[in-house]
Image 1: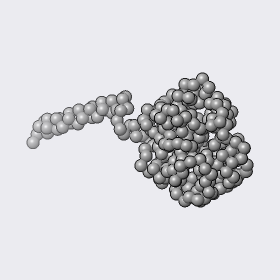
Image 2: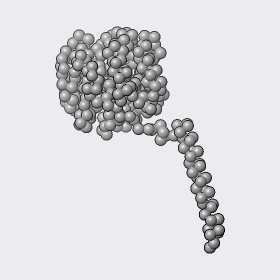
Image 3: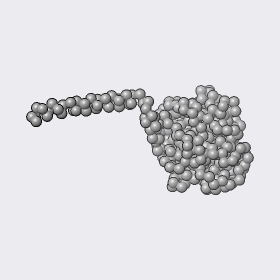
Image 4: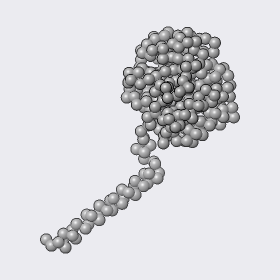
Length: 297
């Protein structure tokens, strides 16, 4: 075989390879431009150093998002992300807290005081502790760290599901006065529970909005530049809107002004918190729920 013949025979496959490369490049360009593939939408969640979750009370999506009485919450929406189809799972309050924290209602059907340590099911705190991560709750109005009282002034245990579990040390339940001013000392994941007025249960949306800005606005801004995250959600709606509630994310790695119209509930939010914290375990119904996507940059 002559050299000329060999060159002619190799020219066609090389041309085909070049064509295939061009097609691949075109496809990659379309992928990057449209962002419509399932793989692109299922990008991994970020890994924040600190996650603070605030749970507010009994307000429907339309009572907060776009409402004049909630300028701070709407600023978090504008600078962060909102889930436009986020839902509570039941009524009244207490079962929703257990669902958000442990992936199941744990038999709770009312707002009664729960016997301390009467449950042992896996939950977000027990998973964090088992993985060597840190956890705490900051509870406004709690008389003292680890207090197991059912109520005190505007404090109510029904909004604090961690007391129901024997696998969550009671001393991880702190007063809100113990929320650190040095945010770098916060646990990996923490919940903040305002009292019955500041969570909007007994007081107005404007009251809760102002409290959130005054007490956690500093953390929210710090989070953006310190690989941390603020999540704000509600336990349930006002019983008039199909249990559609506001859920917001703000901080590092949240695409500003983003939103998701996917239908999510407390189990999805729990799964998201577990994955953001790098946990491989998933409590209760969070095991079969999907994490929130489409809002991370």
